[in-house]
Image (tube, rainbow over all chains, first blue to last red):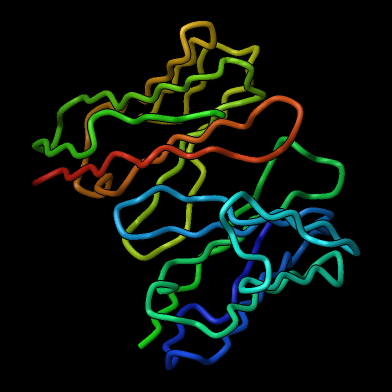
Length: 116
Length: 112
């Protein structure tokens, strides 16, 4: 149980295009989902926290108009990188809190984004 | 602001050695601490989770300890194997909210 999936697992796009990454909790309802970014040999950095049915909370320094997050249901959150640039190339990982459990996060397998 | 530091950044050992990975955090008001394994290009695998009221957790050849007052945790790996080669991440969950703060990780290479 407690499986989180991400789609796609990797994506290559041209500079200026938008890319959508999906995060799904497969066997539980996730009231809260988190989006992280990881650059090579760096730690995971929290980008934003999304709660189902409300606006995401972005960490300092993360552009909310560039990284659009939608958490429309209890099992799906999406991250859209708008007008992607090469510096947005990174590994994006989502995690999810099962409903009522704030002390546990289940992580997705990650999405490798390469912007040419 | 919570900061998590992991030492060493990289470690290379021959198979069979016992080893210790270190993690320190600046704010002791944590809810729990977790150790993860990350293989290259992959997501995270949770290894051990220690609640703030606990001192240690064990799973197979892995043992993690927590000294909350001094802001330190160690991950002990016994009888290391080549399959243990990966990056090990330490993360703390801060009291009051469920966000995690990660360290940069220790890259472990166990040679046959």
